[in-house]
Image 1: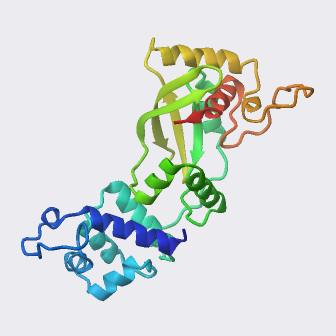
Image 2 (image 1 turned 180 degrees about the vertical axis):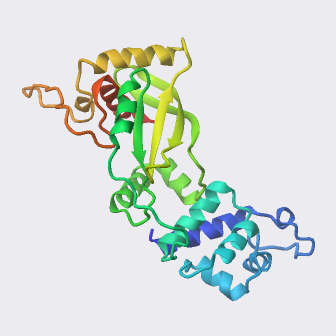
Image 3 (image 1 turned 135 degrees about the horizontal axis):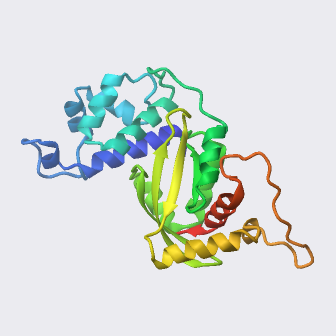
Length: 266
């Protein structure tokens, strides 16, 4: 789906979620053929013409002012994550950024790498955001998952967005089995687009024991072999420690991270 299609699907899905009562409307027709609000009602709430809102919902956000976007967010009662998503869609549609842009970081600074090297007891990585709707790799991944997974296809089509700052992730690892790990995301303000993602398990829990077991296993094995098993006659070689990138961290922490992220999330 292109950007215009994403905008159309997102705005129409948000409009369908709000009832007239939730929007504070007191006078409206009781016999309604559409769920949620009508386009005319959203237009009135946002203070724009019906024709202009219809143009926006057709996927044309190019050149839309900040004030209109804010009014649209209020009319549709968008939460923080949905509001940010709307701005991302508008930006991708050609909206000129009104704040000073900063060049995204493309490598981990030595001080951050040193911090990662010292964190040997928990899986931790530095993550780079994939927010570009025109990213071909991201588009291909969404297409593949939509084709192979009905559950993913249904959830993606619902356009429910949220911020993943903290929570619980579930993994299934071929060595230690199921893992239920808490995660925390910490932005790195000095490195635009990068964030530190750390996982932990409750002290003394089976998941904590499994992490320690996995760390011991990763110290003597190549975790990449789990995703790309060699042919029987091919020996498994240890990875060379080169210049680190976003997903390649040195020492025990490096191998522990690769081992955990080689697992399948569920």
